[in-house]
Length: 329
Ligand code: UT7
Image 1 (cartoon, rainbow, N blue to C red):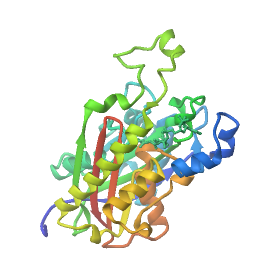
Image 2 (image 1 turned 45 degrees about the horizontal axis):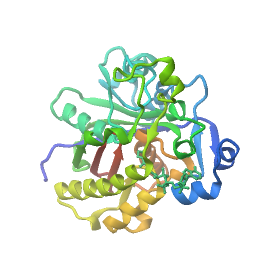
Image 3 (image 1 turned 90 degrees about the vertical axis):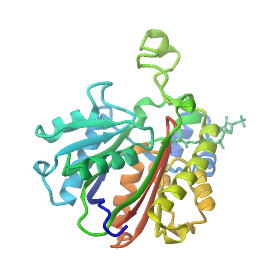
Image 4 (image 1 turned 30 degrees about the horizontal axis):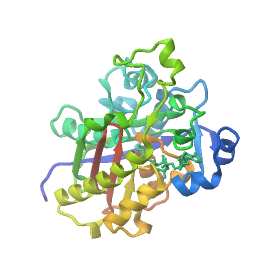
């Protein structure tokens, strides 16, 4: 392991919209209660983008903050990757809208679409591109405006999601810190359990697709729940094995923030003490690909990450996709 080349995060930042939607607000919109939402999901409030804000606007702000945090300018970046499931437009990629906003016309830009696992898939893609010499410094952003594809009349889904974006700047590590290992997988046979059914070429937009609410997120929640617990457990165990580490080596576990019961179940399966498990779902809900970069930045702000801290990142989402990254700060 000693001489293994690896990538590291040299700056982070995040942005969430100002507008807060509380469970009390939702009680006025659908047949639900604060008690149900908190006990079944752990969510108390979430952020909602304004009518004018698209995903790239949130990503742009997160990117500016990450650049500032790493004392770099746009000129120092040579690739933009954006993971999201709520693009500004079906094409071009949201990464290109972000590039336009940053005036970074010297770099290539593309999206990495992998459900809620997109940020970890993005880190893995970035690792390959950096270590192969294709890119020197990558701006990786995970951003969503899930409120724009939420059916606000469907209590099964509308209480769960929020909007936000997180960004990280990645480059090759010169010491033994950085990404130690990863594990990633997908199972497309379960794609129908979590998707936006229309608006693509399988089911193009029509008056009928609009009338049938097919441009909203659809999810078989309890099915997704079962797979998430199993796969996130598997991913973290495999990634740890590949890093030559054990569960006891984990200092901080950052799971995808979809449901506090999933987080608790994965933590219990891995036997990770609760104080090592990061949770912010109460404040932001499920912000999909933005969960993990927001978590990393918040932990840095709280000074909970120090040189040498072993962090395990773990995510699961539409596709299904799942992945875990083991990281030494
Ligand atoms: O980020 C990508 C991955 N996404 C996830 O991992 C989400 C995974 N799924 C979940 O988090 C959970 O399955 C949910 C939070 C979506 C639902 O929790 P659940 O314990 O699986 O509930 P359920 O869907 O089995 O529904 C239980 C009951 C139903 O009523 P009946 O049929 O038992 O009378 C629902 O109609 O709860 C009802 N219900 C609600 N009641 C009050 C569903 N949503 C609500 C609501 N308020 N908002």
